[in-house]
Amino acid sequence: MAVATYGANLLVAQTLCRSGEWRGPVTDHFDGRHFHVADEVEQGSFLRALEWFCFRDPGFYSVVAANADVPELAGEVAPGGWEATMVNHSTVLLRLRGLNVLTDPVWSDRVSPVQWSGPKRCRPAGIAWEDLPRVDAVLLSHDHYDHFDVETLQRLVKRDNPLFIVPLGMKSLLEYHCGRARVREIDWWQETAVETAAGSVAVTLTPAKHYSGRYRSEERKNRSLWGGFFIRSHDGVKVYFAGDSAWTSFFAEIRERLGEPDLAILSIGAYKPLDFIAKAHLTPQQAVKAFKALGAVRGMACHFGTWQLADESLQETLDDFRSGLSSEGVQEDAFVAPFNGKTMKGRAAEGCRGEEVASPRKGEVGG
Image (cartoon, rainbow, N blue to C red):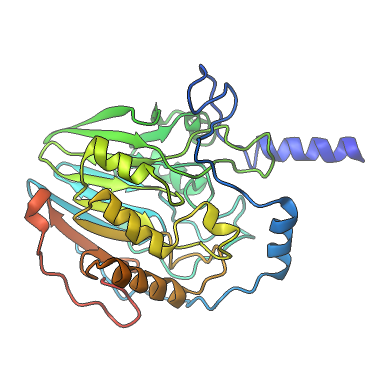
């Protein structure tokens, strides 16, 4: 029986729940087999996870058949401008002049190894698949199911063959599922250039306080790297996409090294119970602190509203976010929590300060 169980676990870990893997020299955050960080995530014990799973009491999460917002995509983004449309969760269509970028794309109904079980979609994608414009590049922050959706990635490779920019170790996972995709692997603080007809765009992988792994075992954990992305366009636009991260000093370091972003995309959902889930994710209040630490001009909140991955209700997330804005003295039109389909627009540097923003609808903060 023990041999059969071991064999079944090995098969699942190598196929359905396969994780990324990196082989390379030892560094300050790679021991030769696993990635790590000094400010490491303190994950709860197996018993704590089992207790939460068996006795969790999630708050109410609204389900909608259609989105209230309709994307407002420009025919062409003006020089020095940016456009960001919330698709769902951590999937954002970011458009710069000459470049369309997707972050952590998910169009599936469930964020799970299978589509018959796991967290189910509560609201449709903000951009229907058939309405999605050409995608030039895809940024993948890490390999968790709500950020690395195999079905969506396969569809993107087949339709657009975009350039994938990923942390170390994720190329093997992407190629296992998608075949010969165009992939660039980079390490923390490493920069790669994306050439467009309008000019070069620099993409830097930034550190984060999180972890990786698609199968729950210590051996498979942290075999690939995780992180966020800082984008600097040819015409001066700076955008930061944090991926998943708990509160960390990395936010201040990113500002020191790369500058203050015109737009910061930060997660605000999946944080309760605080003693368990929030160790790997920002709370809404911490997201506002991160926004300030980055010195960002504008902010877009993500990682909420589409799948209920933790125990907080949707309204609780929005209320906690609004409370964080108030306590930190941040205006609601500066850092927005948009529902799916909402498009935000701005300009580089001082150009978007003071831009008029539509008043938020009831139940929505700033967006």
